[in-house]
Structures are given as structure tokens and as C-alpha cells.
Image (cartoon, rainbow, N blue to C red):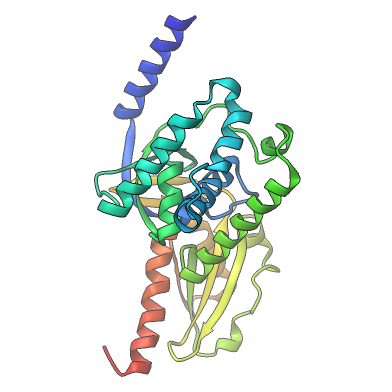
Amino acid sequence: MKIIKKVYASYIKWHDRRFCDYCLCSIGDIILQRDVPSNNQLLLTSRLMDVESYLEDGDSTFNNQNKISYKAYGGAHKEALGNRHFMDLISSYQTNGYRDDSFITCDNTFSLMDGNHRMGIHLYKGIDTVNVRMVHRKVQFEYGADWYYKVGLESEFMDALYHRYYCVQKWLIETGNTFCAIIHAQNPNSVPKDMSPVSDLQKLTTPLHISTLEDAGVTVFQFSLIAPGYKVEKGQLISSRAEEVYKIMNKRFGNSIRIEVSKSCYEGKKLWDYYHSSLKNEKDGTT
């Protein structure tokens, strides 16, 4: 049995090296809530909480990491070794910053497979882009968020975890790390303040925030996709569902209004930055 497992692990390593794509993405492409919080998104959030405790309070127990790991691996979890590796990684970030040759790994649904600790540090430092290797397979044995309750983690721990997770979601919206649609309308009042009633959009998206930048003449609609259907084309991360959103919105508002829809949170961040910085420059009298 051990030999079979070794052979299978070697095959998976070879497969992932041979069949993968590389891209630069927004951290929102990984942790922005889709339908419900996923297991790996909560795991990433727990790493963020440990980084905060270590750097702000000097707490080197990495309580969240160890609680979850003991529930997952029992006596096989090596607490001292795990703590040391985490401290070394944080120290490396503090000294060298984020290395451009460092790639996290996601499966073909863009669920995080490897890199939770690095992403926790990324979030803490407000670094909103990350290099990703996307392998051509789906993570096996993907548990839902209810796993945390099933293994008996106490309610107080889960309340704190979910609270921090939703704070991260708020930060993603405030910094533009979401999918984004820009609606160019001469009359901003012609754009609804709530996209939820648009039934076709309900099937694909979760509306997050709508803001009108009157001086820029645009309405910014931020949203997440329930099932993005990510792929990488020519080094660019693209959601196959984003095109459907564009068609629905174009049909809703008509050809007389120009609409831009991002194909990823990375592209959404660029759009969000462009229109907010353009507006700021106009107010400052700069170009």
C-alpha cells in the first residue's frame, strides 16, 4: 500500500508539472466568496489570524493552525516543526518581501491547493496580486466549510474565524479586488442602485456594491461569480462566466450604453483603480 501511495504521489507531481498554466491574479480571485465560504478560504483566513497574532502580539503558538491541524491529522501533526516553518516564512517576507519566483498552486476551479501560509501573509501586508500555477485537475476530497463544525471546533473559535473572513470580504470590496462592471451612462439615474432584481444575473452573480462616480460619468458595479469557470489563456486568468454577465447587462441596458465587464478580479481591480484614480486626478488637477 505504501509503495502504491508513493507511485501515485510521484505521478501527481509529474502530472501537475506537465499539465499546468501560470498567471498573475488578484487575491480576490482566490478568496472572494463565491456561493458560500469554502473550506480552503476559511483555512487561509485562519493563517491570516495567526500572522496577526504573531506580528502584533508576539504570540508564537500559532493557535489557529494547530487547532485545525490536530483535528485534521491527529497525533501525526508536528506542532513544533509547523510553528518553526511558519515563523521562518514570516521572517523571509519581512526581510525579502514577496519573491517573484514564488507560485501558489490552485486546481482547475481555482481553489487553493498549496500556499495558505503565504496567502495569509499576503493579506496581512495588503499585497493584492499573486503568482499562480493552475493545475489541470480538481482537488480530491474537497470538504465544505461545515467540516470545521463536524470535527468539533468550538463555537467561539468558529465565530472569530467567520468574523475575520467577512472582514476580508469587506476589504476586497473597498480595495476593488472583485469582479467589476463599469457602466457608462450620461444619466446615472438610469442605472438601478440594486442589481439583485435582474433575474438572469441572480443565477450567476452575487452583487457586492454599486457606486456612482458622477464626475467620471460611470457607475461601478462590483460582484462575485458563483461559479467563475476560470481558465488561463496566454498568461491571463479569464472567467468563462464573465462573458455571460456582459451579454446579460448589455441586453438589460441596451447598446446605447457602453459597458465594460472584467474577466477576473485581477482585471476588475485594474478597472476599479483606473476610474477611481482618474477621478482623483481630475479633482487634484493632475493628469
